[in-house]
Length: 152
Image 1 (cartoon, one colour):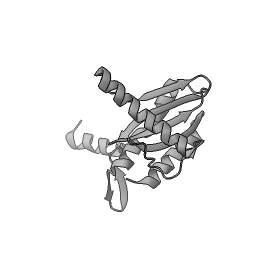
Image 2: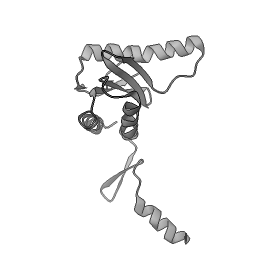
Image 3: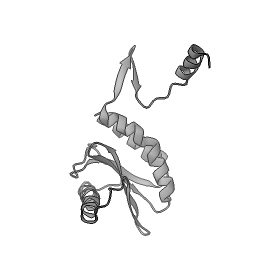
C-alpha cells in the first residue's frame, strides 16, 4: 500500500473539488489508514464516524438479510454529507462534504479517483524500463499498434 500516493491523491481531490471538507481512508475496524487527516476533521470524530459507517450497514444487512450497499451516504441539510465508499479489501474512503454539492456530483467526483486509490491500496504496479505503469492506465498507442498488427 502506497500511503504517500494515496495521501497526495486525496489532497488533490479535496483541493480540486468544491464543497469537499475532508477525506480519509479507514479500515473497516475504524482504524484510520491515512496518517494525516485531510481537511476539516477532528481525529476522534473521524474514528467515531468511520466506526458507525462500518457497523450500521453490516448490522442492517445481517438483520434484514439485505445485500450490502457499495456506497453509503448520510445527509443532513444543516451539516452536509458523510459518504463511505469501499476502495479495497476492508478499507473505505470516508468523505465529508458541505450541502452545497449535490450527492450525484459528489459520487461522480469520487468515482474519478477511486480506481487510483484502489490501485495504490492493492499495490498493483510494475516497472517497465524504469517507468512505473499501473493497471488502470490506458495507453492509446497500444491500441493503434494492435490495429496495425491485426490489419483492422
